[in-house]
Length: 158
Image (tube, rainbow, N blue to C red):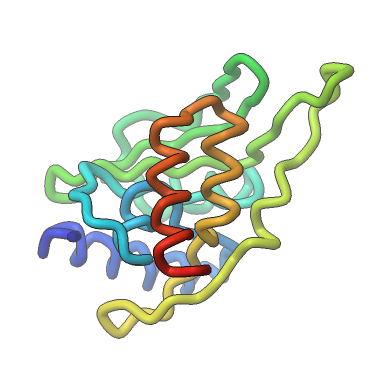
């Protein structure tokens, strides 16, 4: 369940990103909760398609910035990351999320094809489908969390 503070932050972000006309989705634990998982998120995670969109968000929320946009590379995938904070609620936004294929060529994860809209607290939120979320957790080798998502998919027959 999202806390009242998290709901307020989500509303601020929802209104701003829609006003900026950005392509984005809610991902991670807040997304899981909105789609029926019983857990308490510690933050709010979002994904946008491009670094340019991250820059627009950074400019909009320059007073909420924890750090500037940073490039992160992990074993098998990379992304740009922006961390914000609203009333002690951390918000992580990633963009240009890429993975390496068998020849170590960077390719896009086709996550935006998994966008679905869910009505929550009078917001029509763009959310990553649980199937796509599950696949992302498997690709990034977070299997324990992936299996919890799979259980929710199986129970709700998504």
